[in-house]
Structure formats: structure tokens, C-alpha cells
Length: 276
Ligand code: ATR
Image (tube, rainbow, N blue to C red; front, side):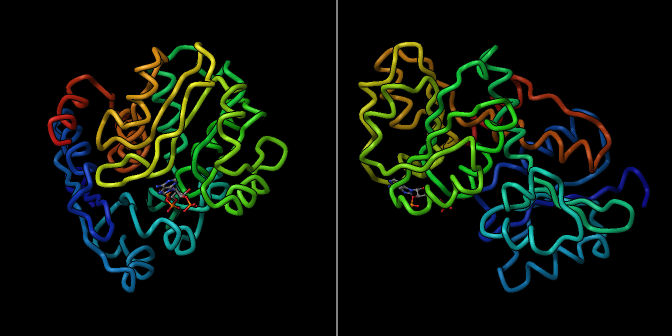
């Protein structure tokens, strides 16, 4: 296929909410690449076939979002290490003639913190709220960066325990009611739940016990300042919002499909902010 005609996609169901086309089309314009990146609404029943068939439809690859990340994991011929450990695929590409799946969420989480908070990985005692796919990506990133004392706290404690087995030796599972005590000895709090996400209700945990030097981060980015971040800021704690993770997780895919490594620039952040 001609270099200029490269076609990539983001597929989900629904897909209208995805900011990925805004991000990738901004980079395509920035580099003057004659390629395209399009949102595709693919129903669950059709996804497995699409994941193995996208090259024959003229695509070099693309992103996968809700609800297809687990099916993508099962549908590709090869997976990278992050995808294997997280159990979900968010990036597809063709390599050596076969479909590959990777997961860039953990990369995006760590790269955002690298950009925003020098030495963040030196904090050692992390509490992760949630035990779904997003928590798996965050815990994988924390493990990669040397965290060995990760407390997973989840409303459904069984899921927290299950996840702690997947990350045996670095993570333990705990019920929601253990949170105040765990916060007392944490210096890094990450929310991966939809708690506080636009339209979601639920009680924001009391952050009173968190030490003053603790950092609070949320992977939710709509709204940008979640109730949890607002509570942390109110206490004078350092906070990091979820938008940077979204922007950084897009970088490796763009580089694979279009051959150029893009920047997460202030202009890009402003562009996406104007859409939130
Ligand atoms: P994702 O892949 O985005 O992580 P998920 O697998 O559906 O999505 O997981 C959502 C997480 O948010 C879960 O940890 C869920 O808790 P349960 O396992 O108990 O369902 C958590 N969650 C969602 N709404 C919540 C709320 N109002 N309060 C606390 N936790 C909530």
C-alpha cells in the first residue's frame, strides 16, 4: 500500500464518545501525513471477525475500545507482554503477515506521570481503587516501575482478591471498608473506578488519613476534575488528572501505523479539553 494512503481506526460500540479520532487526526495534520484515522462502530457479534480481518479491509491497524478489548485479546495471532498480563488489547497492527495486539494503557499511565511528576515512582506504597481492566493496566505499570506494596481496594472484594493473585507478590486485595486504614500508610492513590465519572453517583472516599505528601491520580477524565481529585485538592494534596494518560496511550499506536513518534503537546491537550 502506498505510504500516503495508510488507514487506521478506533473501533468500539458505541464509538461516538471516543476522543481518539481527534488525537490521531491532529497528529496526521501536524506531520502532513496523507493517512486517515476513523471511528468504526462494530457490534460485538461482528468484532472477532473484524479483528482478524482488518488488513484485508485496507487498514494498517487501529485502536480497540469498550466493549471489545477482551475479544481483541482472544482474536489476534500474537500479543505483547503488556497485553498478556493485562488480559486486554487496545492496539492492533499487522506484523510479519499476522495480526498483533498490544496494550498501551500501562505505558500511557506511566508516561503521563513521568511528564507531570518527576520521581513519582519513588513513592512505594500505592492504593488502587477498582479491580477491572483499567486497574490491571495501572497495576502492571506500577509493577514495571518497581512498586512492591500495592493495595487493591474494590467494592466487590472477590475481584480485588482475584486480581491480587494475578499480581502475586506485589499486590494484595482489600474490601472498601479497609480504605481509611490503608490510606493512612499510602503515598500514592489511583482511582480506576467509574466513581465520580460523569453521570455516576457514589460516595467519594474520605481522604483524611492520607499523608500530606501523598499524590492522588484519577484515570477518569470526564469530568477532568473528578470528585476525588477535588477532595484531594481541597486537602492541599498533589493531584494528576486522567487526560494525560489518554493522550500518551495513543503515542505507540500512531508510531506503529504511521512511522513517526508524535508528541503530547500543550496544543493537543487544549484541543481535547475543548471537547470535554
Ligand atoms: P474497567 O475495565 O474500565 O476497569 P470494569 O471492569 O467494569 O471497567 O470495572 C469497573 C470498576 O469500577 C470495578 O472495580 C467496579 O467495582 P465492582 O467490581 O465492585 O463492580 C468499580 N465501580 C464502578 N462503580 C463504582 C462505584 N459507584 N463505587 C465503587 N466502585 C465502583
